[in-house]
Structures are given as C-alpha cells and as structure tokens.
Amino acid sequence: MQDLITTVGALRRREVGFTSLHENLDTTTPGGRLVFHVFAALAEFIRELIVSGTREGLASARARGRVGGRPSVMTPEIIRAARDMLPNPDTSITSIAKLLGVSPGTLYNHIPDLIELRSSRVPKQLGGGANGRRDLGEGSTSARRYGREIITWEPAPTYRSASAEWTSPGVD
Image (tube, rainbow, N blue to C red; front, top):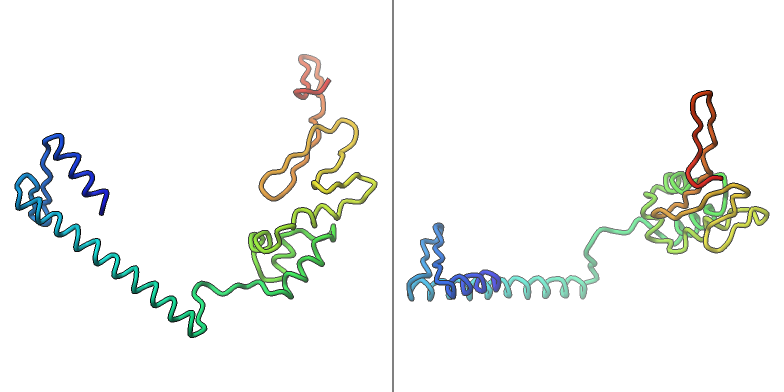
C-alpha cells in the first residue's frame, strides 16, 4: 500500500492526476486525495489486523502442541539406513531413495554430508579423496562437480580418414 501512496505522490509532484475507475476516485481534487488516503489507511489497518490474528492463531496452536506444515517423511531410522547404504558402490542415490520411499532431493536435504559419504566408496588405489574427486589416470581431462553429482570425462579419441584429420580440443 505504501508503494501506491508513493506512486500517487510522485504523480502529483509531476502534476499528473490519478483516477481510479473502479472506486470512482479522483486525486486531482482535495476531496479525492482525502478519500484516497482514508482508503489507504483502512487497508493498512485491516492488513495489520489479519497479520496479528494469524500470529496469535499460530502461537495458540503451538501452545496446544500443534505444529504447522507438512509432516517430515525422514525419520532417524531412514537417515541411518541411507547412511549405511551410501558407501556401497552397487547402489545409486536414486535407487536408495526409491528403496526408502523418499525422493533423491529429500536425501540431499537431510544428509548434508551425502557427497562425502558417496565419495568414500571410491577404492583407495584409485585415489578417492575427501573432495570426492579421483585421479582418472593418464590422458584424463578433468573432474567437475555439477549440482550434487560429480561428472568425469575422458578426452575424445583422435579420428583419421583419408581426406581429413580430427583431434580432440586440448589433446596433443
């Protein structure tokens, strides 16, 4: 509401009148400006009454032991089961989530160190580190973290034909 009052004030300073067609309100007259400001004050008063009533209702519900919002599907048992399954290299995060009856996003939200737990499944001889990256060996290009998964790639092979020769960018 304050934005509307500010806008009408700015229009008035530029000698532009505001006329509301719905309320038949014209701010080019002193009476129209009075009615506009009375309506604005009433609207702000009603809004504040609604906000305070909502806050009182929520406080009363909390005092009675009621908690608002959607119930959480994650229990300590589900979190414990997910943590036990994460280091297993044979299971994906999606399959763990399906098995537990939750979405993969829910696992990421409730297990903050999920990526580190997942990276602990890389065998030591491959160089799995705490940052979740591993050495891909000779000729590897890079490993990059996209969202919640780690994407790794190898350089594309070099192709030769009788008419042309193609090589991967950045590969000598």
